[in-house]
Image (cartoon, rainbow, N blue to C red; front, side, top):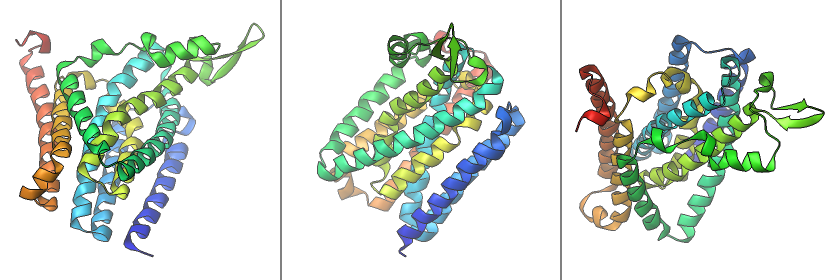
Length: 318
């Protein structure tokens, strides 16, 4: 077996055991997670993701290992941005605490399946039409500028979501939670519960975020192994991250701007790929990308915390 085949095999085994563990131990009886449990589980998923990066470094070499770590951190920071939307969805549909873990888990499994499909299509497009990278780069710059200047809280309204409106139009839907069921009978007719709608919205919401994250990770690495594994490891920890951050995510006022700067940076890097390659070697590019990602995300979080301590509302700063 080649080093790459060994890495894929290890990834498959780890992924299978991780999902089995999450389905079995971590989601047993849809038990509500405490902050402490969510912290431990989040640390577990992050260490698992970073640890796999060490394995990639060992099997594939330093350059690929750094690419994986950069891509994983990029995807993980984008997943934090997902949490805010998830919180709004659960709040709007008034899902009981006991049903949230299972709904998140099913939504995440569906998100993994969709991401595999999206990545496969994206990689195939780039291999056949290399100029697609320039479209991806321009899209990331546009998305970054839009994200930097927008207020996500004002933009996303679950009641006006196209997915929710579509389900209401074509399926019999009730806003009752169904006591943990996805379908129930009302007046002799089967209807889909709010929990069913929530699971569908979680999965489709992640697809929307994937439109940013997959081009972004391709701007960091063209290695298919890195693209697949970094994406999926970042998604795996979303459930525990939700319970850890749902009360604090609104305090990270500038995280969105930090992510936006990273997206613009990667977009510029994709557009100027050939010019940059003449001045900076591949290994140095990976290291620079890693520093930019870590610096922007860490800086935006610390700046948010600093402004919270000063008691300065974001909208009054100017």
